[in-house]
Length: 224
Ligand SMILES: *Cc1c(COP(=O)(O)O)cnc(C)c1O
Image 1: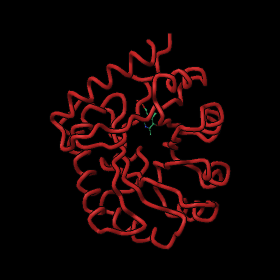
Image 2: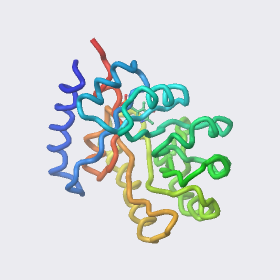
Image 3: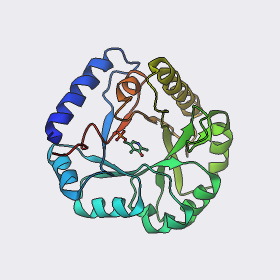
């Protein structure tokens, strides 16, 4: 399938689910290009996409180099502390801030303020990265010490399941936590955004108020 066709379908779905959503504005679609070639990423650009996501340092730098300069680059994977220096100043949004020593390293290596989402493990599954929902407030309190970090929102990955009600619940819990942090009105943690929803669950994320959805397979995957 062409990216334009996939995008059209996704946009139709988004508009449909927005009717049942807690928000009225469509989320930003991040094209997750980690599985695909540079040419396919360029096709996504030509289809009008301007947000791109990668989860590995090499792939990230390669796609950033190849794409036009007006893209917004999201690093969506877990980042090893020793690799921070290779990539941090090229990232527009980091979606996976999940531990204090990573924050410390980012703060040390960044030459400007880095916009970060805190990755939250809402489901509590052991295989998932992210800090527990109950630890978000303490974690944010500790981030205050790092001048080069701005907490722009919360991010989560839902487990792979057909249980839609359960996914609704997880996304809703993240939204409520986002609202709570946002209401604290901290300068270093405006926490306005919600990064949630992937190919299999983005329609649920739209209904629960996602501001960024991260789509790979259904958008740029399955090349002919
Ligand atoms: C791979 C990945 C995605 C996209 O996954 P799809 O199921 O292919 O849409 C989204 N978010 C993160 C963090 C990922 O690693």
